[in-house]
Amino acid sequence: MADNPLSNRPARILPVLGLVLLAAVGASLLAGSSSLRSGEVLAVLTGRSDNDTVRTILWQIRLPRALLAAAVGATLSLGGLVFQARLRNPLAEPYILGISGGAAIGAILGILGGMAMFPGVTLSSFAGSMLVMGMVLLMARGGTTGRSDALLLAGVMLNAFCAACIMFFLSLSQSAQVHHILFWLMGDLSMADPRRAYLLLPLLACFFLIHVHARPLNLLLTGDESAAALGMHLQRTTWVLLGTTTLMVSIVVSQSGLVGFVGLVVPHFFRLLLGPDHRVLVPACILGGGAYLVLCDLLARSLPAGGEMPVGVITAMIGAPVFTLMLWRAGR
Amino acid sequence: MNAVSVDTITVRAGKRKILDSLSCAVREHDFLVVIGPNGAGKTTLLKTLCGLTPLAGGGVTILGLPLSSYSRHRLAAAVALVPQQISLEFSFSVEQTVLMGRFPHLGLLEREKQRDYDAARRAMRFTEVDHLAGRRLDQLSGGERQRVMIARAICQQPRIMLLDEPTAALDPAHQVLIMQLMQRLRKEEGVTVVMVSHDLNLGAMFGSRILLLRDGRVVNSGSPAEIMTAENLRQAYGCPMHVDLHPLTGTPRVSILPFDSTRPAGREDAGAEQPSPLS
Image 1 (tube, rainbow over the protein chains, first blue to last red):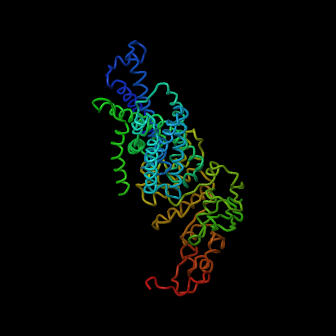
Image 2 (image 1 turned 45 degrees about the horizontal axis):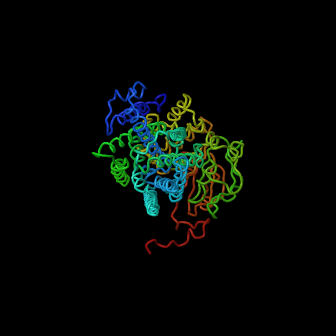
Image 3 (image 1 turned 180 degrees about the vertical axis):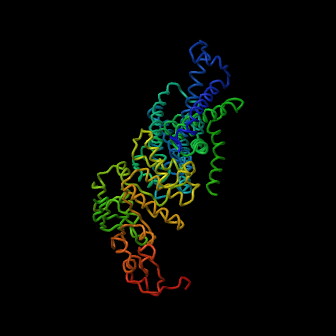
Protein backbone atom coordinates (compact mmCIF):
# COMPACT_ATOMS: atom_id res chain seq x y z
CA MET A 1 0.00 0.00 0.00
CA ALA A 2 1.19 3.47 -0.75
CA ASP A 3 1.94 5.58 2.30
CA ASN A 4 -1.25 7.50 1.73
CA PRO A 5 -3.51 5.64 -0.67
CA LEU A 6 -6.05 8.44 -0.73
CA SER A 7 -3.79 11.24 -1.79
CA ASN A 8 -2.78 9.73 -5.10
CA ARG A 9 -4.42 9.83 -8.53
CA PRO A 10 -8.02 10.87 -7.78
CA ALA A 11 -7.14 13.89 -5.61
CA ARG A 12 -4.83 15.24 -8.32
CA ILE A 13 -7.81 16.01 -10.55
CA LEU A 14 -9.16 18.67 -8.16
CA PRO A 15 -6.86 21.53 -9.31
CA VAL A 16 -7.73 20.58 -12.91
CA LEU A 17 -11.44 20.80 -12.10
CA GLY A 18 -10.85 24.19 -10.49
CA LEU A 19 -9.27 25.40 -13.73
CA VAL A 20 -12.17 23.93 -15.77
CA LEU A 21 -14.63 25.84 -13.59
CA LEU A 22 -12.65 29.06 -14.04
CA ALA A 23 -12.50 28.51 -17.81
CA ALA A 24 -16.26 27.84 -17.94
CA VAL A 25 -16.98 31.02 -16.00
CA GLY A 26 -14.58 32.89 -18.28
CA ALA A 27 -16.37 31.61 -21.40
CA SER A 28 -19.70 32.52 -19.85
CA LEU A 29 -18.48 36.11 -19.30
CA LEU A 30 -17.35 36.46 -22.90
CA ALA A 31 -20.33 34.91 -24.72
CA GLY A 32 -23.78 36.42 -25.03
CA SER A 33 -25.97 38.65 -27.16
CA SER A 34 -23.18 41.23 -27.24
CA SER A 35 -19.90 39.36 -27.34
CA LEU A 36 -17.02 40.87 -25.39
CA ARG A 37 -13.29 40.61 -25.99
CA SER A 38 -11.22 38.93 -23.29
CA GLY A 39 -9.02 42.04 -22.98
CA GLU A 40 -12.07 44.19 -22.23
CA VAL A 41 -13.36 41.73 -19.67
CA LEU A 42 -10.01 41.46 -17.89
CA ALA A 43 -9.65 45.25 -17.83
CA VAL A 44 -13.10 45.68 -16.26
CA LEU A 45 -12.58 42.88 -13.74
CA THR A 46 -9.25 44.34 -12.64
CA GLY A 47 -10.65 47.88 -12.51
CA ARG A 48 -8.44 49.17 -15.34
CA SER A 49 -11.33 50.14 -17.63
CA ASP A 50 -14.07 52.72 -17.23
CA ASN A 51 -16.27 51.41 -20.04
CA ASP A 52 -19.69 51.67 -18.29
CA THR A 53 -21.53 49.42 -20.76
CA VAL A 54 -19.10 46.54 -20.40
CA ARG A 55 -18.94 47.06 -16.65
CA THR A 56 -22.74 46.89 -16.37
CA ILE A 57 -22.95 43.78 -18.56
CA LEU A 58 -20.26 42.02 -16.52
CA TRP A 59 -21.05 43.03 -12.93
CA GLN A 60 -24.82 43.23 -13.21
CA ILE A 61 -25.65 40.45 -15.65
CA ARG A 62 -23.01 37.94 -16.69
CA LEU A 63 -20.92 37.45 -13.53
CA PRO A 64 -23.96 37.07 -11.22
CA ARG A 65 -25.48 34.64 -13.72
CA ALA A 66 -22.28 32.60 -14.04
CA LEU A 67 -21.90 32.49 -10.25
CA LEU A 68 -25.55 31.48 -9.83
CA ALA A 69 -25.10 28.72 -12.43
CA ALA A 70 -21.94 27.50 -10.68
CA ALA A 71 -23.65 27.56 -7.26
CA VAL A 72 -26.76 25.75 -8.55
CA GLY A 73 -24.67 23.14 -10.40
CA ALA A 74 -22.42 22.54 -7.39
CA THR A 75 -25.38 22.29 -5.01
CA LEU A 76 -27.47 19.93 -7.13
CA SER A 77 -24.46 17.69 -7.87
CA LEU A 78 -23.57 17.52 -4.20
CA GLY A 79 -27.23 16.94 -3.33
CA GLY A 80 -27.34 13.97 -5.70
CA LEU A 81 -24.11 12.61 -4.26
CA VAL A 82 -25.40 12.75 -0.68
CA PHE A 83 -28.78 11.20 -1.51
CA GLN A 84 -27.10 8.42 -3.48
CA ALA A 85 -24.79 7.62 -0.58
CA ARG A 86 -27.41 7.81 2.15
CA LEU A 87 -29.99 5.80 0.24
CA ARG A 88 -27.30 3.58 -1.33
CA ASN A 89 -29.02 4.07 -4.64
CA PRO A 90 -27.10 5.41 -7.66
CA LEU A 91 -30.32 6.74 -9.21
CA ALA A 92 -31.37 8.93 -6.28
CA GLU A 93 -31.12 12.71 -6.73
CA PRO A 94 -33.17 15.68 -5.53
CA TYR A 95 -35.07 16.16 -8.81
CA ILE A 96 -35.95 12.49 -9.38
CA LEU A 97 -37.01 12.00 -5.75
CA GLY A 98 -39.35 14.98 -5.96
CA ILE A 99 -37.43 17.00 -3.37
CA SER A 100 -36.76 19.81 -5.84
CA GLY A 101 -40.48 19.67 -6.71
CA GLY A 102 -41.36 20.09 -3.03
CA ALA A 103 -39.00 23.06 -2.84
CA ALA A 104 -40.67 24.54 -5.96
CA ILE A 105 -44.16 24.23 -4.42
CA GLY A 106 -42.92 25.99 -1.30
CA ALA A 107 -41.23 28.69 -3.38
CA ILE A 108 -44.31 29.28 -5.55
CA LEU A 109 -46.55 29.53 -2.51
CA GLY A 110 -44.08 32.02 -1.08
CA ILE A 111 -43.95 34.06 -4.31
CA LEU A 112 -47.74 34.04 -4.74
CA GLY A 113 -48.10 34.94 -1.07
CA GLY A 114 -45.97 38.02 -1.68
CA MET A 115 -43.06 36.96 0.51
CA ALA A 116 -39.62 38.49 0.14
CA MET A 117 -37.14 36.34 -1.83
CA PHE A 118 -34.98 35.94 1.28
CA PRO A 119 -35.64 34.65 3.81
CA GLY A 120 -39.40 34.24 3.09
CA VAL A 121 -39.38 32.30 -0.20
CA THR A 122 -36.23 30.37 0.76
CA LEU A 123 -37.84 29.25 4.02
CA SER A 124 -41.14 28.25 2.38
CA SER A 125 -39.10 26.39 -0.23
CA PHE A 126 -37.15 24.63 2.55
CA ALA A 127 -40.41 23.64 4.27
CA GLY A 128 -41.75 22.17 1.01
CA SER A 129 -38.62 20.14 0.32
CA MET A 130 -38.37 18.87 3.93
CA LEU A 131 -41.97 17.69 3.71
CA VAL A 132 -41.28 15.73 0.53
CA MET A 133 -37.99 14.36 1.89
CA GLY A 134 -39.82 13.08 4.98
CA MET A 135 -42.35 11.36 2.72
CA VAL A 136 -39.59 9.78 0.59
CA LEU A 137 -37.83 8.45 3.70
CA LEU A 138 -41.11 7.10 5.07
CA MET A 139 -41.80 5.29 1.80
CA ALA A 140 -38.25 4.00 1.45
CA ARG A 141 -37.76 2.75 5.00
CA GLY A 142 -37.96 -0.84 6.14
CA GLY A 143 -34.88 -2.06 4.33
CA THR A 144 -35.96 -0.86 0.92
CA THR A 145 -33.53 2.04 0.70
CA GLY A 146 -31.30 0.04 -1.60
CA ARG A 147 -34.15 -1.04 -3.85
CA SER A 148 -34.16 1.15 -6.90
CA ASP A 149 -37.71 0.30 -7.91
CA ALA A 150 -39.42 1.18 -4.61
CA LEU A 151 -37.48 4.41 -4.24
CA LEU A 152 -37.90 5.50 -7.84
CA LEU A 153 -41.62 4.72 -7.82
CA ALA A 154 -41.97 6.81 -4.67
CA GLY A 155 -40.02 9.61 -6.39
CA VAL A 156 -42.06 9.43 -9.61
CA MET A 157 -45.27 9.52 -7.62
CA LEU A 158 -44.15 12.47 -5.48
CA ASN A 159 -42.82 14.31 -8.53
CA ALA A 160 -46.16 13.91 -10.31
CA PHE A 161 -47.98 15.04 -7.18
CA CYS A 162 -45.72 18.10 -6.85
CA ALA A 163 -46.23 18.98 -10.54
CA ALA A 164 -50.01 18.69 -10.10
CA CYS A 165 -49.88 20.90 -6.98
CA ILE A 166 -47.81 23.50 -8.81
CA MET A 167 -50.30 23.64 -11.73
CA PHE A 168 -53.17 23.74 -9.26
CA PHE A 169 -51.74 26.77 -7.47
CA LEU A 170 -50.87 28.49 -10.73
CA SER A 171 -54.39 27.88 -12.13
CA LEU A 172 -55.96 29.44 -9.07
CA SER A 173 -53.66 32.41 -9.19
CA GLN A 174 -54.61 35.58 -11.02
CA SER A 175 -51.06 36.82 -10.68
CA ALA A 176 -49.36 38.41 -13.67
CA GLN A 177 -46.28 36.45 -12.64
CA VAL A 178 -47.73 33.12 -13.87
CA HIS A 179 -45.93 33.15 -17.24
CA HIS A 180 -42.67 34.02 -15.57
CA ILE A 181 -43.13 31.26 -12.98
CA LEU A 182 -43.77 28.69 -15.73
CA PHE A 183 -40.45 29.64 -17.37
CA TRP A 184 -38.74 29.57 -13.98
CA LEU A 185 -40.08 26.06 -13.39
CA MET A 186 -37.94 24.75 -16.24
CA GLY A 187 -34.83 26.19 -14.64
CA ASP A 188 -34.21 29.87 -15.18
CA LEU A 189 -30.90 31.52 -14.34
CA SER A 190 -31.80 34.90 -15.83
CA MET A 191 -33.03 36.10 -12.42
CA ALA A 192 -29.46 36.24 -11.10
CA ASP A 193 -29.14 39.33 -8.96
CA PRO A 194 -25.81 40.60 -7.56
CA ARG A 195 -27.70 41.89 -4.50
CA ARG A 196 -28.44 38.29 -3.53
CA ALA A 197 -24.79 37.25 -3.55
CA TYR A 198 -25.03 36.75 0.24
CA LEU A 199 -26.92 33.51 -0.48
CA LEU A 200 -23.55 32.01 -1.39
CA LEU A 201 -22.59 32.11 2.30
CA PRO A 202 -25.16 29.58 3.58
CA LEU A 203 -24.38 27.43 0.52
CA LEU A 204 -20.65 27.47 1.28
CA ALA A 205 -21.43 26.56 4.90
CA CYS A 206 -23.51 23.60 3.67
CA PHE A 207 -20.68 22.50 1.32
CA PHE A 208 -18.24 22.60 4.22
CA LEU A 209 -20.54 20.63 6.51
CA ILE A 210 -20.98 17.91 3.88
CA HIS A 211 -17.25 17.87 3.15
CA VAL A 212 -16.40 17.15 6.80
CA HIS A 213 -18.87 14.26 6.61
CA ALA A 214 -17.09 12.71 3.62
CA ARG A 215 -15.76 9.80 5.67
CA PRO A 216 -19.17 8.97 7.23
CA LEU A 217 -20.58 9.08 3.68
CA ASN A 218 -18.02 6.43 2.72
CA LEU A 219 -19.07 4.25 5.64
CA LEU A 220 -22.74 4.60 4.71
CA LEU A 221 -22.01 2.99 1.34
CA THR A 222 -21.02 -0.23 3.13
CA GLY A 223 -24.44 -0.51 4.82
CA ASP A 224 -26.15 1.01 7.86
CA GLU A 225 -25.16 -1.77 10.25
CA SER A 226 -21.59 -1.82 9.05
CA ALA A 227 -21.34 1.98 9.44
CA ALA A 228 -22.83 1.93 12.93
CA ALA A 229 -20.51 -0.90 13.97
CA LEU A 230 -17.56 1.27 12.90
CA GLY A 231 -18.67 3.96 15.34
CA MET A 232 -20.91 6.16 13.24
CA HIS A 233 -23.97 7.73 14.89
CA LEU A 234 -26.41 6.72 12.18
CA GLN A 235 -29.45 8.79 13.07
CA ARG A 236 -27.58 11.98 13.85
CA THR A 237 -25.44 11.75 10.71
CA THR A 238 -28.50 11.05 8.55
CA TRP A 239 -30.34 14.12 9.84
CA VAL A 240 -27.29 16.37 9.49
CA LEU A 241 -26.63 15.20 5.93
CA LEU A 242 -30.19 15.15 4.63
CA GLY A 243 -31.16 18.34 6.48
CA THR A 244 -28.13 20.20 5.08
CA THR A 245 -28.73 18.86 1.58
CA THR A 246 -32.41 19.75 1.63
CA LEU A 247 -31.62 23.26 2.88
CA MET A 248 -29.08 23.98 0.15
CA VAL A 249 -31.30 22.46 -2.56
CA SER A 250 -34.23 24.61 -1.45
CA ILE A 251 -32.03 27.73 -1.50
CA VAL A 252 -31.00 27.14 -5.11
CA VAL A 253 -34.47 26.01 -6.26
CA SER A 254 -35.93 29.24 -4.88
CA GLN A 255 -33.37 31.14 -7.02
CA SER A 256 -33.24 29.08 -10.20
CA GLY A 257 -36.35 26.89 -10.37
CA LEU A 258 -36.22 23.23 -11.27
CA VAL A 259 -33.00 22.16 -12.96
CA GLY A 260 -33.24 18.42 -13.36
CA PHE A 261 -30.77 15.54 -13.60
CA VAL A 262 -27.62 17.52 -12.63
CA GLY A 263 -27.48 15.52 -9.38
CA LEU A 264 -27.54 12.32 -11.39
CA VAL A 265 -25.17 13.03 -14.28
CA VAL A 266 -22.33 14.75 -12.40
CA PRO A 267 -21.87 12.34 -9.42
CA HIS A 268 -22.19 9.36 -11.75
CA PHE A 269 -19.54 10.74 -14.08
CA PHE A 270 -17.10 11.45 -11.26
CA ARG A 271 -17.75 8.12 -9.54
CA LEU A 272 -16.80 6.37 -12.78
CA LEU A 273 -13.73 8.56 -13.14
CA LEU A 274 -12.49 8.77 -9.54
CA GLY A 275 -14.03 5.86 -7.63
CA PRO A 276 -16.39 5.94 -4.64
CA ASP A 277 -14.30 7.90 -2.08
CA HIS A 278 -16.31 10.94 -0.96
CA ARG A 279 -13.21 12.80 0.21
CA VAL A 280 -12.47 13.28 -3.47
CA LEU A 281 -16.03 13.13 -4.80
CA VAL A 282 -17.40 15.98 -2.65
CA PRO A 283 -14.95 18.64 -3.93
CA ALA A 284 -15.07 17.11 -7.43
CA CYS A 285 -18.87 17.47 -7.53
CA ILE A 286 -18.69 21.04 -6.22
CA LEU A 287 -16.15 22.12 -8.85
CA GLY A 288 -17.28 19.85 -11.70
CA GLY A 289 -21.00 20.34 -11.08
CA GLY A 290 -20.47 24.09 -11.06
CA ALA A 291 -18.58 23.97 -14.36
CA TYR A 292 -21.19 21.64 -15.90
CA LEU A 293 -24.11 23.98 -15.25
CA VAL A 294 -22.19 27.08 -16.30
CA LEU A 295 -21.53 25.35 -19.65
CA CYS A 296 -25.16 24.15 -19.94
CA ASP A 297 -26.31 27.72 -19.31
CA LEU A 298 -23.92 28.94 -21.96
CA LEU A 299 -25.58 26.53 -24.41
CA ALA A 300 -29.06 27.60 -23.29
CA ARG A 301 -28.13 31.23 -23.98
CA SER A 302 -26.33 30.54 -27.27
CA LEU A 303 -28.43 27.91 -29.07
CA PRO A 304 -31.65 29.90 -29.78
CA ALA A 305 -31.06 32.53 -32.48
CA GLY A 306 -32.89 35.17 -30.50
CA GLY A 307 -33.44 35.06 -26.72
CA GLU A 308 -32.67 31.98 -24.68
CA MET A 309 -34.15 28.71 -23.41
CA PRO A 310 -34.38 27.54 -19.78
CA VAL A 311 -31.19 25.75 -18.71
CA GLY A 312 -33.36 22.88 -17.40
CA VAL A 313 -34.13 21.99 -21.04
CA ILE A 314 -30.45 21.36 -21.73
CA THR A 315 -29.82 19.41 -18.47
CA ALA A 316 -32.92 17.26 -19.06
CA MET A 317 -31.86 16.52 -22.65
CA ILE A 318 -28.50 15.29 -21.38
CA GLY A 319 -29.74 13.77 -18.11
CA ALA A 320 -32.76 11.77 -19.25
CA PRO A 321 -30.75 9.52 -21.64
CA VAL A 322 -28.06 9.05 -18.94
CA PHE A 323 -30.75 8.11 -16.42
CA THR A 324 -32.30 5.62 -18.87
CA LEU A 325 -28.87 4.11 -19.54
CA MET A 326 -28.19 3.72 -15.82
CA LEU A 327 -31.62 2.17 -15.23
CA TRP A 328 -30.97 -0.27 -18.07
CA ARG A 329 -27.55 -1.17 -16.64
CA ALA A 330 -29.02 -1.57 -13.13
CA GLY A 331 -31.59 -4.02 -14.50
CA ARG A 332 -28.98 -6.24 -16.18
CA MET B 1 -11.71 -10.94 33.93
CA ASN B 2 -14.78 -11.13 31.74
CA ALA B 3 -14.55 -9.31 28.43
CA VAL B 4 -18.31 -9.47 28.10
CA SER B 5 -20.99 -10.04 30.74
CA VAL B 6 -24.58 -10.36 29.66
CA ASP B 7 -27.08 -10.15 32.49
CA THR B 8 -30.67 -11.33 31.84
CA ILE B 9 -31.13 -9.28 28.68
CA THR B 10 -34.35 -9.16 26.73
CA VAL B 11 -34.56 -7.89 23.15
CA ARG B 12 -37.89 -7.48 21.41
CA ALA B 13 -39.01 -7.15 17.81
CA GLY B 14 -42.53 -5.79 18.26
CA LYS B 15 -44.22 -8.06 20.77
CA ARG B 16 -41.95 -11.03 20.02
CA LYS B 17 -38.98 -11.69 22.31
CA ILE B 18 -35.86 -12.37 20.24
CA LEU B 19 -33.69 -12.72 23.34
CA ASP B 20 -35.47 -13.75 26.50
CA SER B 21 -33.73 -13.10 29.85
CA LEU B 22 -30.47 -14.33 28.38
CA SER B 23 -27.33 -14.39 30.53
CA CYS B 24 -23.80 -15.40 29.60
CA ALA B 25 -20.20 -14.30 30.03
CA VAL B 26 -17.12 -14.37 27.82
CA ARG B 27 -13.72 -14.40 29.49
CA GLU B 28 -10.90 -12.33 28.03
CA HIS B 29 -8.96 -14.12 25.25
CA ASP B 30 -11.69 -16.75 24.87
CA PHE B 31 -12.88 -17.94 21.48
CA LEU B 32 -16.61 -18.32 22.01
CA VAL B 33 -18.64 -19.97 19.27
CA VAL B 34 -22.37 -19.26 19.45
CA ILE B 35 -24.46 -22.03 17.93
CA GLY B 36 -28.16 -22.78 17.71
CA PRO B 37 -30.95 -23.25 15.17
CA ASN B 38 -32.29 -20.48 12.93
CA GLY B 39 -34.17 -17.86 14.93
CA ALA B 40 -32.33 -18.74 18.16
CA GLY B 41 -31.15 -15.13 18.55
CA LYS B 42 -27.46 -15.60 17.67
CA THR B 43 -27.13 -12.60 15.34
CA THR B 44 -29.27 -10.46 17.65
CA LEU B 45 -26.91 -11.31 20.51
CA LEU B 46 -23.91 -10.15 18.44
CA LYS B 47 -25.69 -6.92 17.44
CA THR B 48 -26.59 -6.31 21.07
CA LEU B 49 -22.96 -6.66 22.14
CA CYS B 50 -21.91 -3.91 19.74
CA GLY B 51 -24.81 -1.64 20.64
CA LEU B 52 -26.81 -2.01 17.43
CA THR B 53 -29.94 -3.44 19.07
CA PRO B 54 -31.75 -1.66 21.92
CA LEU B 55 -32.36 -3.65 25.09
CA ALA B 56 -35.86 -4.12 26.48
CA GLY B 57 -34.41 -5.35 29.78
CA GLY B 58 -31.23 -6.46 31.52
CA GLY B 59 -27.74 -5.11 31.01
CA VAL B 60 -24.46 -5.75 29.18
CA THR B 61 -20.99 -5.04 30.53
CA ILE B 62 -18.09 -4.66 28.10
CA LEU B 63 -14.56 -4.76 29.54
CA GLY B 64 -15.90 -3.88 32.99
CA LEU B 65 -18.04 -0.92 31.90
CA PRO B 66 -21.79 -0.83 31.20
CA LEU B 67 -22.57 -0.83 27.49
CA SER B 68 -24.72 2.27 27.97
CA SER B 69 -21.69 4.25 29.19
CA TYR B 70 -19.87 3.87 25.84
CA SER B 71 -20.20 6.42 23.05
CA ARG B 72 -20.52 4.89 19.56
CA HIS B 73 -16.91 5.85 18.81
CA ARG B 74 -15.48 4.41 22.03
CA LEU B 75 -17.47 1.20 21.65
CA ALA B 76 -16.23 0.72 18.08
CA ALA B 77 -12.65 1.18 19.30
CA ALA B 78 -13.20 -1.69 21.76
CA VAL B 79 -15.57 -4.00 19.87
CA ALA B 80 -15.41 -4.78 16.14
CA LEU B 81 -18.14 -6.51 14.16
CA VAL B 82 -17.61 -8.48 10.98
CA PRO B 83 -21.12 -8.43 9.48
CA GLN B 84 -22.54 -11.29 7.47
CA GLN B 85 -23.02 -9.06 4.43
CA ILE B 86 -21.68 -5.79 3.13
CA SER B 87 -23.24 -3.62 0.46
CA LEU B 88 -21.30 -3.78 -2.81
CA GLU B 89 -23.44 -1.24 -4.70
CA PHE B 90 -20.55 1.25 -4.66
CA SER B 91 -17.40 -0.77 -4.25
CA PHE B 92 -14.25 0.52 -2.55
CA SER B 93 -10.77 -0.87 -3.02
CA VAL B 94 -9.40 -3.31 -0.46
CA GLU B 95 -7.06 -0.73 1.08
CA GLN B 96 -9.83 1.88 1.33
CA THR B 97 -12.12 -0.69 2.98
CA VAL B 98 -9.50 -1.76 5.52
CA LEU B 99 -8.64 1.86 6.30
CA MET B 100 -12.29 2.44 7.25
CA GLY B 101 -11.44 0.49 10.39
CA ARG B 102 -9.59 3.59 11.65
CA PHE B 103 -12.84 5.60 11.83
CA PRO B 104 -13.34 5.10 15.60
CA HIS B 105 -9.79 6.39 16.23
CA LEU B 106 -10.18 9.62 14.24
CA GLY B 107 -12.07 12.85 14.84
CA LEU B 108 -14.48 14.15 12.18
CA LEU B 109 -11.96 16.71 10.90
CA GLU B 110 -8.88 14.56 11.46
CA ARG B 111 -7.01 12.97 8.55
CA GLU B 112 -5.35 9.56 8.68
CA LYS B 113 -1.79 9.66 9.98
CA GLN B 114 1.11 7.33 9.41
CA ARG B 115 0.08 5.13 12.37
CA ASP B 116 -3.34 4.61 10.71
CA TYR B 117 -1.76 3.53 7.42
CA ASP B 118 0.59 1.26 9.38
CA ALA B 119 -2.35 -0.34 11.20
CA ALA B 120 -4.15 -0.95 7.89
CA ARG B 121 -1.03 -2.41 6.28
CA ARG B 122 -0.45 -4.68 9.26
CA ALA B 123 -4.07 -5.89 9.24
CA MET B 124 -3.84 -6.66 5.51
CA ARG B 125 -0.63 -8.61 6.04
CA PHE B 126 -2.17 -10.53 8.95
CA THR B 127 -5.11 -11.67 6.82
CA GLU B 128 -2.89 -12.09 3.73
CA VAL B 129 -4.81 -9.68 1.52
CA ASP B 130 -1.98 -7.14 1.09
CA HIS B 131 -1.42 -8.29 -2.50
CA LEU B 132 -5.07 -7.37 -3.24
CA ALA B 133 -4.73 -3.81 -1.88
CA GLY B 134 -5.69 -2.03 -5.09
CA ARG B 135 -8.46 -4.43 -6.15
CA ARG B 136 -12.13 -3.51 -5.79
CA LEU B 137 -14.20 -5.46 -3.27
CA ASP B 138 -16.72 -6.63 -5.87
CA GLN B 139 -13.89 -8.17 -7.91
CA LEU B 140 -12.89 -10.56 -5.09
CA SER B 141 -14.00 -14.10 -4.29
CA GLY B 142 -16.15 -14.74 -1.22
CA GLY B 143 -13.15 -15.96 0.79
CA GLU B 144 -10.99 -12.99 -0.14
CA ARG B 145 -13.81 -10.57 0.67
CA GLN B 146 -14.33 -12.18 4.06
CA ARG B 147 -10.62 -11.82 4.86
CA VAL B 148 -10.79 -8.15 3.87
CA MET B 149 -13.70 -7.61 6.25
CA ILE B 150 -11.73 -9.30 9.01
CA ALA B 151 -8.74 -7.07 8.16
CA ARG B 152 -11.01 -4.02 8.50
CA ALA B 153 -12.09 -5.27 11.94
CA ILE B 154 -8.45 -5.90 12.95
CA CYS B 155 -7.59 -2.38 11.79
CA GLN B 156 -10.07 -1.12 14.41
CA GLN B 157 -7.63 -2.59 16.97
CA PRO B 158 -10.48 -3.91 19.11
CA ARG B 159 -10.17 -6.01 22.24
CA ILE B 160 -13.28 -7.97 21.30
CA MET B 161 -14.14 -9.19 17.82
CA LEU B 162 -17.64 -10.34 16.84
CA LEU B 163 -18.16 -12.35 13.67
CA ASP B 164 -21.50 -13.26 12.15
CA GLU B 165 -21.19 -16.55 10.25
CA PRO B 166 -17.87 -15.65 8.61
CA THR B 167 -17.52 -19.09 7.04
CA ALA B 168 -20.99 -19.25 5.49
CA ALA B 169 -20.83 -19.88 1.74
CA LEU B 170 -17.08 -20.54 1.79
CA ASP B 171 -15.37 -23.70 0.55
CA PRO B 172 -13.73 -25.99 3.19
CA ALA B 173 -10.22 -24.61 2.65
CA HIS B 174 -11.37 -21.01 3.17
CA GLN B 175 -13.45 -22.05 6.19
CA VAL B 176 -10.37 -23.49 7.91
CA LEU B 177 -8.30 -20.47 6.86
CA ILE B 178 -10.75 -18.06 8.50
CA MET B 179 -10.95 -20.14 11.68
CA GLN B 180 -7.16 -20.36 11.96
CA LEU B 181 -6.99 -16.64 11.46
CA MET B 182 -9.32 -16.18 14.43
CA GLN B 183 -7.21 -18.51 16.54
CA ARG B 184 -4.05 -16.58 15.66
CA LEU B 185 -5.79 -13.31 16.45
CA ARG B 186 -6.72 -14.64 19.86
CA LYS B 187 -3.30 -16.07 20.64
CA GLU B 188 -1.00 -13.47 19.08
CA GLU B 189 -3.06 -10.32 19.63
CA GLY B 190 -4.99 -11.31 22.76
CA VAL B 191 -8.32 -10.49 21.14
CA THR B 192 -11.49 -12.05 22.56
CA VAL B 193 -13.43 -13.65 19.72
CA VAL B 194 -17.19 -14.26 19.66
CA MET B 195 -18.38 -15.99 16.52
CA VAL B 196 -21.79 -17.14 15.34
CA SER B 197 -21.62 -20.31 13.28
CA HIS B 198 -23.84 -22.99 11.86
CA ASP B 199 -20.86 -25.27 11.37
CA LEU B 200 -20.80 -27.41 14.50
CA ASN B 201 -17.62 -29.27 13.60
CA LEU B 202 -15.60 -26.13 12.94
CA GLY B 203 -16.97 -24.64 16.15
CA ALA B 204 -15.94 -27.72 18.12
CA MET B 205 -12.49 -27.82 16.51
CA PHE B 206 -11.53 -24.16 16.97
CA GLY B 207 -13.75 -22.71 19.72
CA SER B 208 -12.50 -22.65 23.31
CA ARG B 209 -16.08 -22.26 24.58
CA ILE B 210 -19.49 -22.98 23.07
CA LEU B 211 -22.75 -21.13 23.76
CA LEU B 212 -25.82 -23.07 22.65
CA LEU B 213 -28.97 -20.99 22.13
CA ARG B 214 -32.54 -21.84 21.32
CA ASP B 215 -35.60 -19.54 21.18
CA GLY B 216 -33.64 -16.62 22.58
CA ARG B 217 -32.46 -18.52 25.65
CA VAL B 218 -29.26 -20.30 26.64
CA VAL B 219 -29.61 -24.08 26.42
CA ASN B 220 -26.11 -24.68 27.71
CA SER B 221 -22.61 -23.25 27.68
CA GLY B 222 -19.18 -24.70 28.33
CA SER B 223 -16.24 -26.35 26.60
CA PRO B 224 -16.86 -28.03 23.21
CA ALA B 225 -16.67 -31.48 24.85
CA GLU B 226 -19.27 -30.49 27.43
CA ILE B 227 -21.72 -28.90 25.01
CA MET B 228 -21.36 -30.97 21.86
CA THR B 229 -23.28 -33.97 23.09
CA ALA B 230 -25.93 -35.74 21.05
CA GLU B 231 -28.52 -34.98 23.69
CA ASN B 232 -27.76 -31.23 23.87
CA LEU B 233 -27.71 -30.83 20.10
CA ARG B 234 -30.88 -32.87 19.62
CA GLN B 235 -32.62 -30.71 22.19
CA ALA B 236 -31.54 -27.48 20.54
CA TYR B 237 -31.84 -28.37 16.85
CA GLY B 238 -34.66 -30.88 17.06
CA CYS B 239 -32.97 -33.37 14.79
CA PRO B 240 -31.02 -36.54 15.55
CA MET B 241 -27.26 -36.23 15.70
CA HIS B 242 -24.42 -38.55 16.42
CA VAL B 243 -21.38 -37.23 18.28
CA ASP B 244 -18.04 -38.97 18.64
CA LEU B 245 -14.43 -37.85 19.00
CA HIS B 246 -12.50 -37.03 15.86
CA PRO B 247 -9.63 -39.56 15.61
CA LEU B 248 -7.11 -36.92 14.46
CA THR B 249 -8.04 -33.78 16.39
CA GLY B 250 -9.66 -35.33 19.46
CA THR B 251 -12.45 -32.75 19.31
CA PRO B 252 -16.16 -33.65 19.15
CA ARG B 253 -17.30 -34.68 15.69
CA VAL B 254 -20.96 -34.13 14.88
CA SER B 255 -22.83 -36.14 12.26
CA ILE B 256 -26.37 -35.28 11.32
CA LEU B 257 -28.70 -38.24 10.97
CA PRO B 258 -31.94 -38.61 9.02
CA PHE B 259 -35.12 -38.16 11.03
CA ASP B 260 -36.24 -41.77 10.94
CA SER B 261 -33.02 -43.17 12.44
CA THR B 262 -33.90 -42.10 15.97
CA ARG B 263 -36.65 -40.09 17.61
CA PRO B 264 -35.42 -36.64 18.78
CA ALA B 265 -35.98 -35.78 22.38
CA GLY B 266 -36.07 -31.98 22.01
CA ARG B 267 -39.04 -31.49 19.76
CA GLU B 268 -42.18 -33.54 19.94
CA ASP B 269 -42.95 -33.18 16.26
CA ALA B 270 -39.45 -33.47 14.88
CA GLY B 271 -39.26 -37.22 14.78
CA ALA B 272 -42.90 -37.82 14.02
CA GLU B 273 -44.00 -39.16 10.70
CA GLN B 274 -42.97 -36.52 8.18
CA PRO B 275 -45.53 -36.04 5.42
CA SER B 276 -44.03 -36.34 1.98
CA PRO B 277 -43.61 -32.91 0.37
CA LEU B 278 -45.10 -34.47 -2.77
CA SER B 279 -48.19 -35.93 -1.10
